[in-house]
Image 1: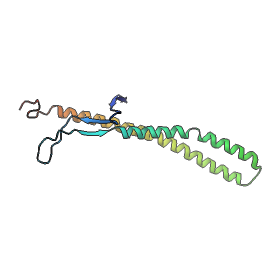
Image 2: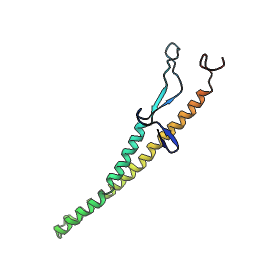
Image 3: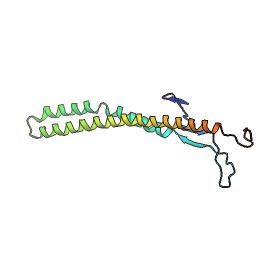
Image 4: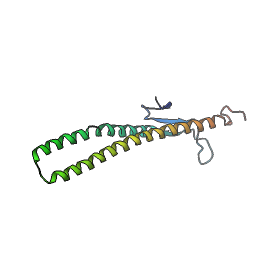
Length: 139
């Protein structure tokens, strides 16, 4: 298990599945004995992927700058250099925008996991107070 923002998230080996202590009722009204489950694992993996994209895109701007530096030195006074500068500036903006979006998305995905855990706890607490026949409750 791991803690995410103060919320315990179940990790491997069950791939982040969390269980609510509620049983389902079958079509005939008989208790099926299954738990309602959801997984924070996919959300956390997506957030980690977004973080990796931020890291991966980090050095791209300096690599682009180094490539252009060599190009400008060898191209002299070609008229296309002005256009190339505009294209470079456009790519730099796009790269920074992508990094910002990925960073924002990672935080939002982790917030979903925290929200799910809070809802799960509230639902579980609600079920804890329900008395059932033969299930330890006073009927």
